[in-house]
Length: 80
Figure 1 (tube, rainbow, N blue to C red):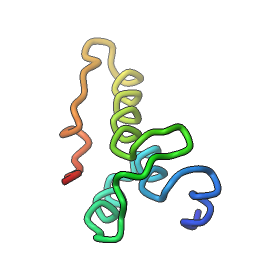
Figure 2: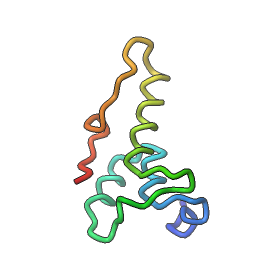
Figure 3: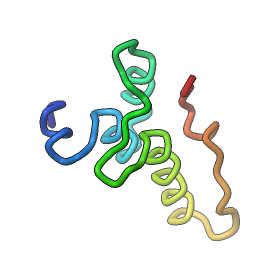
């Protein structure tokens, strides 16, 4: 198990890390927490929302051959 400090040392926030590995329940808890800054960018300059999008897009590409479209809504996360 990684701590928040481990994530930051890797250039990611815990929210970025959860998005990268598709931990939807953790993502929902983090985005719902008032102390979570959803506007922080990781070492690659990406918002957590963008990491989530690309993670699920990659999953879609690897699991289907016909439809490569994906919306943020499909991540099942309320980013507001």
